[in-house]
Length: 218
Length: 258
Image (cartoon, rainbow over all chains, first blue to last red; front, side):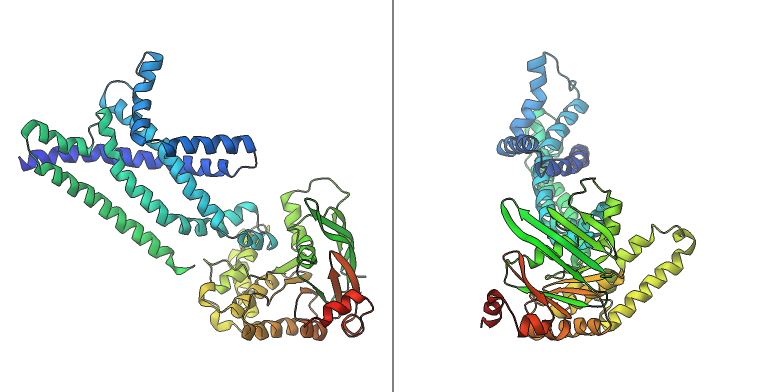
């Protein structure tokens, strides 16, 4: 039984990992774009994005996931995601990427605005180009500011992937809970917890390493 | 001919006029000190010279070449702007060193980036980089910081940081070096080492503009003094004229404050 459960959880973990990575791949650049947008001089764009971020951060991710997965079927009369597992994962990644991009954008904005204006001005009077100032002067200072809050969000993301269960995506929590129904077993739930702990343990070590690497300046 | 000529500069932010019809010139090798209360427009004037602010009126010329003319509305390219800026060096009140680079890297970074635009960069890369590093080491040595070259800014005292900032500004060999209250952010016991460095630059006939609150220092070092109040130049002349024998009531009031 132990190996059956382990195999099932490994399968679930693969889906969890897939949602996690794909969400990061899309949400990180999208979050940066949103951050630039909310700092734009164009007032209407800025307001529009701020309202969007308010809506996304102000409603539950689970609600957004349900709307994104079932909405098209109800409005258009056709399920654009397809009825299979791949479709469910795609819908999850879309919902997660939008949601996390909004949270990331706020963190990025803080990081960008947290670098003193004097840094840019010092680069300017030294005859640097705008891109040199960004890449050689301000970028690393932003990264340093952004790593601690980002590590928080990314750890939360790992656990949020379990929300995909609501649209029956076979992720880690779904896999663990299935033995409760089918075989009346409780221990696979604790075993599932161990999987999450290991996943997050590795991430914690990774972020600790990055923070340490950036510790040489202030 | 004067190395710097500033004519009828005006600057306003929204409805507040910060600089009103300011004109002056500066001879090569001379040091000019700008004194006045906080909010009198000294710092804004310096920022206009460094293209950190755009004046609403007036012209700025260096070596007879007009660098800025408010009447000329043709938008200049980034490239041209950068070239114009390099006539001026700037030392900020709060140093603004790049925290992720060592003292030496702070001094050499801009030079190395600029060198990439040289046509012979690819062939002589190694030699060019070596020269820039050598120049940086010499400058830090001049500032009395040769042993601190590998230190990061947070490992240095305020006075040391400001001296690195001076070396960084000198590295690009500007025609005119500007100081914006270079000792105002320092603890009193650290101002001396920075003033000493500026004094030695004056002795070497570096063309400088120094915005300062250190009146004794201004009198000693400057060849020329400008007293500003409410955006105007109230009085200008030699230290003997402006500080010792001011003709304007406002100058006298300013100098007699405790």
